[in-house]
Length: 64
Image (cartoon, rainbow, N blue to C red; front, side, top):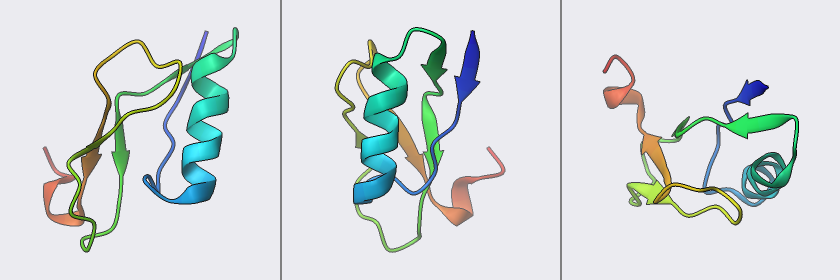
């Protein structure tokens, strides 16, 4: 099983890629994503992802 981290959520392209990864059989989606500092959301729901959502990490939070 390949674990994939999709950065750039909640952007349109990143969201589409995350949806495809979450529904695939050979890959699993990582539960966090690096995003821009201007994004106000804290998480994103992804279709087919079994958890509550993907946590969005802003530049200041990435060291955690």
